[in-house]
Length: 470
Ligand SMILES: C[S@@+](CC[C@H](N)C(=O)[O-])C[C@H]1O[C@@H](n2cnc3c(N)ncnc32)[C@H](O)[C@@H]1O
Image 1 (tube, rainbow, N blue to C red):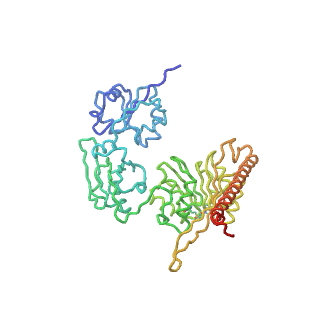
Image 2 (cartoon, helix red, strand yellow):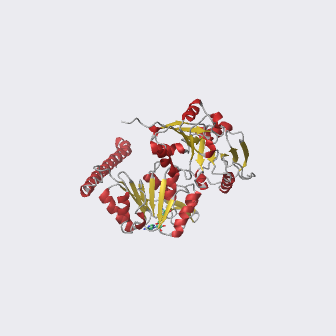
Image 3 (cartoon, rainbow, N blue to C red):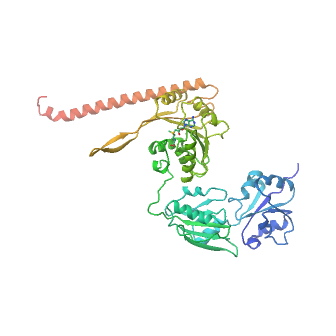
């Protein structure tokens, strides 16, 4: 058996170059037969590093496997800026080679250096990268008193961030731009976002923001159930209270993918994505005007990564990535929509469907009968003026069916090999539940009867004692 190949050493290097490297990193670079890195980084190495210097080609990601393969069997060191595992090449290499074949020697990241300069606790600082990501990503992060460190895409990013902060009502925020951290050319410029006066500076910069809202800034919680006014809409919007319940039942978890069928204004997908930065969603909307609006709402609320598919379900569902959960807010009666969504779900995936029409409700009742889950009716009333008084105005009640696709061999809902048997099991479980409910009602009624009798006797007793006639 041939010995395992030597690990690839990934070395974090700062703007201070060779001077800033520790003994382990220097030793690895002196003995490396090949050093791969950006041209700027390779240029920082002294002559005492004799290995062949190989610059990364562009684009980098697709070239990595070939480059590593070309040097198999040689001692390889890779240079990366700062901490290679923080938005760096270390991640790509770990995915390709596995952690066991890597030896990573980190340097302080730009974020660690920025926190050191600012006196900020790293664990209380929100870090947002705008490298290869839309500016609108920031819209999810703006809260009074919060400290943000924004990794810039280039020299223009600070002015763009200042503009966005102003538009979102966070103009009074203090902004500091830290350039060339760790090098002899390090400098910091600052101002408030609304007064940002600085021309573009060094492209290597990090932006520190102390979030401060103006008096008219909108407060937008990350908890589902944003005010309806947070969305641009034409009435096709799952309203706030039902939306909050719907998101609770959909139960997003980090990294999960939602299909939002009949996206309308996009509110369900947007709030799913706001639940965690790593949550992903696809919104399917047949109306192109609404589809465009969904994109705008998503950007405005800090979820610019939402994928909007313009077209009618179920036709456009084929080929979409497997969802962890599906929400159906429109298109329920289109033939095949429920079937396609259920079929696309993996075991343990969730489905939630809302409707206000009797036709769709009949469909949901049928799916509930066959697959179990929960069928609930949500009624929301708002207090409104009635002349000089106040009364309840009832919104259309929403019927909601939700279910979790069973794991093979687990009921209710049963296993995939025995759909009818599983439906039987679901019905049996439901019947048992109904039986329990009937018992509970009887018990409550009996309880009420006892209480009524006790109350009667309590009222009667004094008179009876006094021998008063009834
Ligand atoms: C009540 S709205 C959904 C509201 C949405 N959940 C929100 O909060 O904005 C229903 C939407 O479903 C869309 N729709 C209906 N049938 C569809 C289908 N088969 N495929 C895709 N979209 C559909 C309609 O155009 C409408 O915008």
